[in-house]
Amino acid sequence: MFDSSLRRFKDQVGTPLVRPMSGVSPMFISILALVVGLLATYTAYKQQYIFALALWLLSRILDGLDGLIARLHDRQSDFGGYVDILTDFVVYAALPIGMVVGSPSKQHYLSLIFLLAAFYVNTASWMYLAAILEKRAAHPPETQTTIVMPAGIIGGFESIVAYGIFLLLPAYITILFAIFTGLVFITIIQRLNWARRNLF
Image 1 (tube, rainbow, N blue to C red):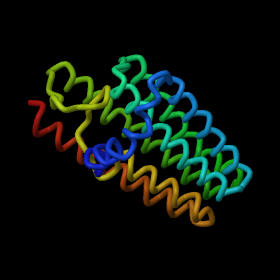
Image 2 (tube, rainbow, N blue to C red; image 1 turned 90 degrees about the vertical axis):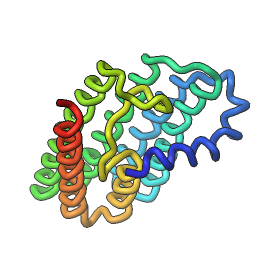
Image 3 (cartoon, rainbow, N blue to C red; image 1 turned 180 degrees about the horizontal axis):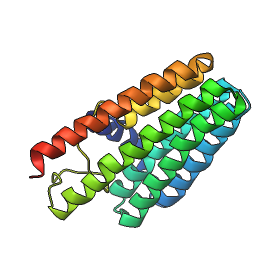
């Protein structure tokens, strides 16, 4: 929901940091974000939630820098964008799995199943839509990411915040997963309505 406006803010804050990093590969930053995200998953599994939170936030900061480095130093590529989104999906799936495996119960596993199912359907809701928009060349000229999608109530920023809340309140992950699952399905419906209005 806030991704577009926050991306401009992130670029303003991050530009002085990445300007001297012309020799750093954006792909290296993407992989580093993946590694740090998996370390966050492991520490969540070990129930070291404060460390997991710190690593989670660091991984998302790194994830925000790879694209900025690519744009600022003219190193953008479709393959880099593909790796970026792929590594993001690994981390977004792994962290809640790590939390549940580290604190197993029937309720936790059930809430995890619904959460991952919502992610699965949500992925279809925007990836295929992004492909259609690319086919129609319907993306806005100022697009800074490899792919574009209509915004919904849950985007990248909201997901970062939600995962942070999961790690801060691990005793409540059943209800927190359920709430987030509901919000993801609302986002799916929003995109479906957008597609119904715009794709005929």
